[in-house]
Figure 1 (cartoon, rainbow, N blue to C red):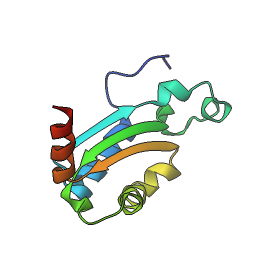
Figure 2: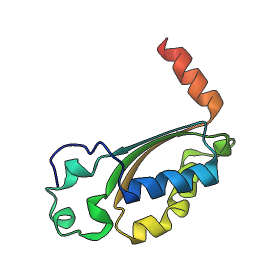
Figure 3: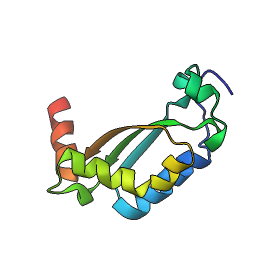
Figure 4: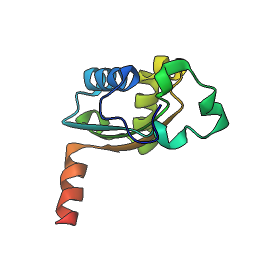
Amino acid sequence: MSNSPSSSPGPMEKSIREKLTAILQPTSITITNDSWQHRHHAAMRDQEVSNGETHFSVQIVSNAFEKKATIQRHRMIYSALSEEFAQGLHSLSLKTRTEAEARAAAANVS
């Protein structure tokens, strides 16, 4: 296990991407494996499940989030990934937007 981010997605990351893509049909999805930043935690050192893939950041743009509060969006994702949590996924940092919200955010940056 290295002390830096992995360049190729592991099985947990692939599973997250496949499930979220199938369920939410996103126009954009970015998944970052942050597990390497948490390997020093005692609970993570002992974790052999999930090939060391325990912490992820997910940025996802999907119209499936229309008219849903942030907590509802997050529950959709956590529900979709319940099997992954049972297999050792420990933490998700989520940024969820609709296409309109993503466009508005991009316009504010310009």
